[in-house]
Image (cartoon, rainbow, N blue to C red):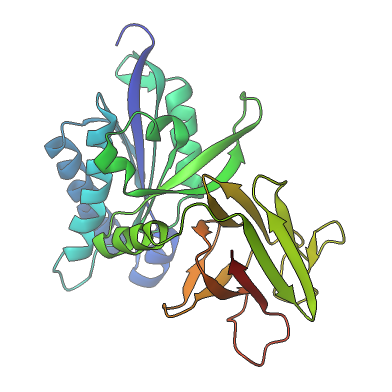
Length: 293
């Protein structure tokens, strides 16, 4: 790469390395982290990736193909989770972005590197975070493993960047797919009930805000709710709840198990209840009842 080219850049960062040094001691922690990064590097090479550098407890790599980068990220988590050792491998955080970069003196620089580093800092242990620019270039089977996660600002870019989570566990992907495909297309009205008040959200109307802030459309004065805890938007025949809170949101859908989301989104299906930062029990006065019509 002697000029700017499109490439997928991925960072893999060991979670909680400081705690490992404190609990295991310097020598044992260093040995465990090295074994972890060796496993990470092996997976990257197996998936046709190139190791750019290892800095402390982080590996930076690049892939010519964004699908292979996603496959490598999923395989890394799977390999580390299945590792059979007296001391289990530490978890890692993974961030990747497909964009422009240039190689110089064995290192790479550019937008792809900066954005990949940012989304890695957002990721938690056992999580993969990527960007909308990466998603639109993925094959359909890999897109099916992703869900919108949040929006953030990137230095040097105007507006907010939409970021996604890659669901590497098969059961997580299945749960998300079931929730989405179970949604009835063509819903035209969402009815909300809270403390004896009724709210009606129409299709194609403005976003509906829920939280403690007086500017919200539905004000929930609870110790567990954020100022702007969640918003509901209408998208392709579905009412979608998007959590943007500190404590997350619990959704109970009729005849289905309870679902918890945090900085994630979920289509609202049929009839159910919403709890802002707390489970929607029958005796909770802050529960929001909903019905898709």
